[in-house]
Amino acid sequence: MKIAILSGKGGTGKTTVASNLSINIPGCIAIDTDVEEPNLHIFLKPEIEKNNIVTKEYPVIDSSKCNLCGKCGNFCRYNAIIPAKDQVVVFKELCHDCGGCKIVCPKEAISYKKRVIGSIYSGISECGIPVKYGELNIGEISGVKIIKDLKKSVEREKIVIIDSPPGTSCSTVAAVENSDYAIIVSEPTPFGVSDMKMVVEMLREMKIPFGVVVNKSGIGDNEIYEYCNSESLEILLEIPYSEDVARLYASGTTFSIKFPKYEKIFYNLFQKVKSEIIKEA
Image (cartoon, rainbow, N blue to C red):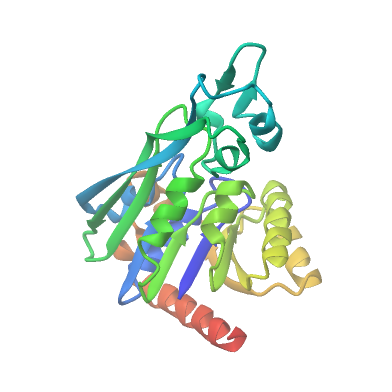
C-alpha cells in the first residue's frame, strides 16, 4: 500500500501531514522523495544507519571510431550530446541515462561512465519507524534517478508513506507513480487552490485516486471548499491553524506527539484512505 502526500506548492503542510500520518500507522515506512530539499528526517529524527550513493551514467565518445554522423545528437531530446564540427560535445549533467545514443551509433563509438549524483539515507526514527530519504547533490539538474532508486528500495514494504516534491514536475510524477492513493495537502488561500488545481489534473491523468487535506483551515476564504464541491473532491481532514502547532513545526517537532488528540485523528485518516484503496481495488 503506497500513499503519496503531495501539494501544488511548497509550504502548505505536506511534510506535516506525512510525518504525523506515518508515526500513527503501525508497521509503515516513511520515505522523502523531495530530494532537492528533503526535510521529513528533521521531524522524524532517524538515526542514520546506512548511506548509499546514487550514480548515473553518461556517454563517453571514442573519437577514433566516431565519424560525426550526428545520429546521437538527433536522438537526444535533452541536448546532452551534440556533434560539433570537429568533435562530439557531451553535457553530462543533462544526460538522462537512457542509453539511446549508444544504440543509434553506427560506429559503436559510445561507451558510458558513472558519476555520483546524490545519496539515499536510511535509519530508524525516534518512534521506531524506518525512514529513508534521498538527497540530490548541489548543481545537479534532475533527481528522478534518486527517486526511482528510493522507491525501488521499499517496493516490498506493506505500507509506504511517500513525502513527494511539490508541484507537478517530473520529480513529482516519479514520486507518485504507481501509488495506490494520493493525499493532496492545500491551504485555503487563492494561491493554494490555484496550484492545487494543477495537481488534481495531474492525478486524474495518472488515474490515481485521491482526496484532500485542508491545512491551516480558518486563515483564508471559502474558495477551496467551493472548488472541492464543484469537482466532487472529498475533503479527508481539516487541520485548523494553530500558533502552538506552528511553533512545534518551527522547532522540528511532529505535533501529534505533543497533542495526543491528533493521534486518533491521523489514524482515522489512514483508515479512511485504506477503505478508499480497498474500494478502488
